[in-house]
Length: 408
Ligand code: ADP
Image (cartoon, rainbow, N blue to C red; front, side):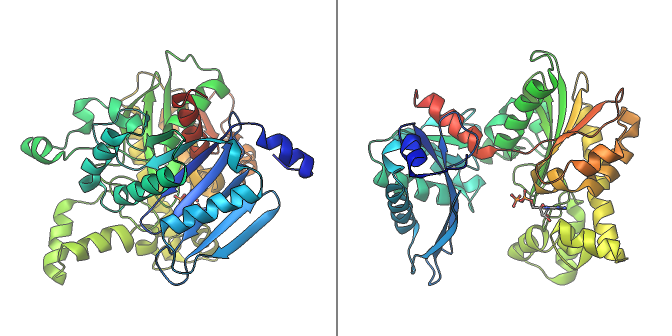
């Protein structure tokens, strides 16, 4: 929503707003959404927290503004955020806070209101997401201190995948690793997959009780999911976000024996392997150029063979795993592309759909070219299995769950 004048600002403050927070170990992403609106009044990012150049950037309809936090941590970021909201007359309208949580293990099957037991549960899942859950907890504590009177809710990236059947989530290793340590497929990006699944049913007029959808969430991290009759039945990410598709800097699937082979050859320790597969692989590792799809498309267009190979491998793996996911569906109504790459790369969509002809997909090249920069829409030919492009909106999904749980 574009605010035209101070008068509009006053009107906005009378409605209830949900503050959505995505807190990492050294960053806080935030969005302020009026209840029932998909457009944030305010969004932004506090980054480099704890370092000398810690800063916070606010984005509103008036533009962007960055303030130094001068070595500040999450608490200072939260204070700067509340000050900014107060100055804009938005603070009194904040009615609840919703937090994105990466890992809820098997304990959290859906979003819940925060209490001490929930905090303990998120702490218990920290060993499964050591880079994320501890940061989320810092955010929850800082938000509770900043807004002691407001209800707070947590929305888990893993929750949507908790409906996976046992045969889909177990790894073929001795079961004691599952029982002793929780080693299994959990899946990620669940909030995005859940949003896209329900939007697809509504947009395409599918039967809510009888549909089959494949979803490709393709950003720097990427995962694909099969949704049958509203339930997630399979997904490509595993116990961690490393498994599955080729990603910006993550390898996705690789023969585990190739990893031990490389480790022996190069004398890599466990941290070295972790870094190789999570930070030096994927599009970056193959191309030797960049993890960024746009940069690789430009290089490929100029004839760079390594960039071409990286993009071909991305499409090959994506089509291969989508084909596998389809086998978990009872019927196939649509494939939906989302995330920065899914929403914008007509080239990768075209390459992927060309490999999926056997499933009945046929691309409409003109519609595919038009579906960029948030345009979205169907990109398949009439009479073929539907393929479409849709912008994801995880913040709105978190705000909606939070509003519901808070009874707003
Ligand atoms: P994240 O997973 O970090 O949220 P995004 O969903 O923002 O990532 O996706 C980032 C990816 O989207 C990058 O690889 C970027 O190059 C790609 N992307 C964005 N715009 C385009 C475009 N116009 N064409 C191709 N790729 C694009």
